Image (cartoon, rainbow, N blue to C red; front, side):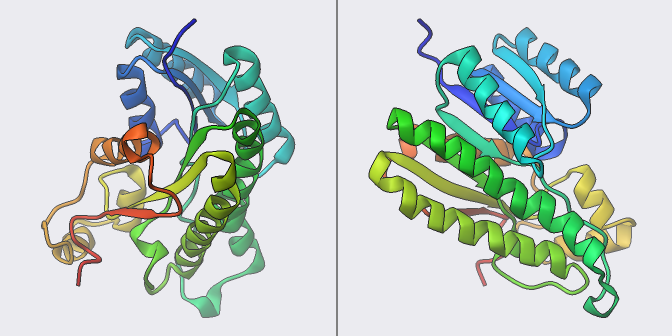
Length: 249
């Protein structure tokens, strides 16, 4: 029987989520990845297997509870347990001042970032508390602890993710389950390119990072692997900020 951990990753098809999946595959973990683009998902699963992981792709929209439930149940049926869950699915939404926001734009962001995290934890925690162990890592953002103009919905959603993380940690602790979050700063992904659509805006953003650069997805994946592992066994309800010093001041 394999002793390698069973890892479930939502939002695994691009950016940080993809880097996390590749990192666990290199560790030879047993990995289930999910997303909404099936061709890309199957291709990722093949890539993870080439790295030596047992890997599967399961279609799941995290804002749909039946799909999240099926995702977790499939993981349990395939591997018999769930050791680490990384909730990376999310969206930045459409930028704009508060005076121009609409209920539809609110729903688009909060369904993905907040409801998706909530539903994922609901079903992941049911599995983990039943087995008496497990670790959940949610993906927040530097903006989960500060404000920013014209991206208020994204900011508010990541504040909510951090609140959910802390509350879930308190509920899960008596069962031997840990819940934490990793909060990246600017990371070189397609999302960063959408946030900063021209070189001038990107340069202005990175000027506010003490290390004077964007992070890379692999650096965030390393942080997630640490937080999810037994090396962080006395850590729960915490937000690990990996942002080049952006929130130090």
